Length: 87
Image 1 (cartoon, rainbow, N blue to C red):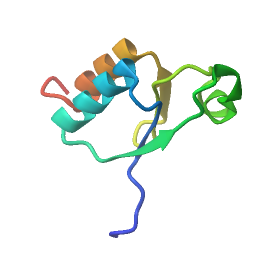
Image 2: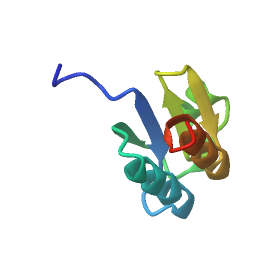
Image 3: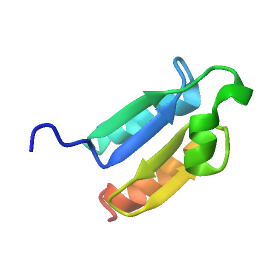
């Protein structure tokens, strides 16, 4: 279906280098994802806290695998391991 949401949702900030690192990896893997931009104020990021248990970004939710995680290095490693050439 054309109107189906991508399985991966990325919670991110504008101009965040850690978020951009994850975006680059998603693009390199050719993965469809949905970006959800969050509040710049750390204390206002309740949507991320509800999803991942933390207020830090980037955070992803992968409905394909049921994985939710934050920290860009962990996310990049997860994406490469799960969807990359080594998958």
